[in-house]
Image (tube, rainbow, N blue to C red; front, side, top):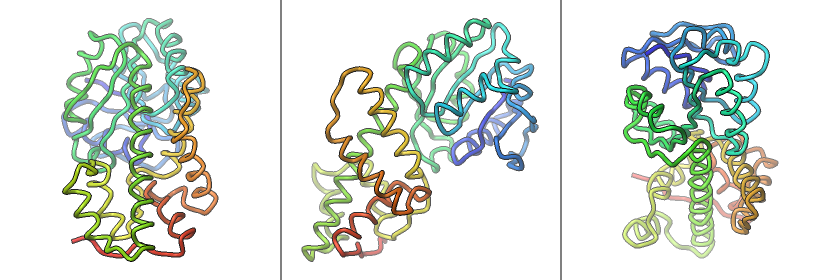
Length: 293
């Protein structure tokens, strides 16, 4: 398929690479020039990347960035034509997604929201899991592209429901990791061996995929960004915004958001979100020890 791919960040670069490896004709655009993807062409604007494409795939940082690449100067809107599909794998506001989709559909094109989970490793390995909102026949047309980038898709309903699902998922990740980080901090302060604690967690009903994935990084004090703290903080704020719109109270997430705000002020915004642990350690006057095997 002919694909215009917009956004070559941690996730987007790997996704575009896998599309090219699978034999699709990919033209890429990135806000910061100079990022290259082997086997692809480079466009100077989103509109140029979308020109003649069957599918425009977006993977940028936030709601404002999606709006800009779609409808700003040199945006995709200039190149939209009947039959084209816009697929957005950014994590953005569900209500904004519905508005963007309506504008795209005015041009005769289709819109699918397709945020994903799987982190940097999943993007590199082509094992992402997509949660998708949109018309089922349009989603089926995207099957070859999903197959090149991921291992499974879940259709969650109409446009906007993919984004709503992603915010619900990231809400859980943030809360689960916060519980794990606080447990490690308290255990360390009380003199408990953290490696042994992690082994216990993994052997009991407390275990989780979040802990299984993050524990080795934490024990090795590796906060290289798989998922930057600033982006998780953005998603937490989006979830709280969506909850406010829906008149839903999220007291646990409100508290965790305060931790992310303080971690950002403490200089951790560009590290992995697991670096919130550093703030807890600072408050407790301890440091988690115990390198993972």
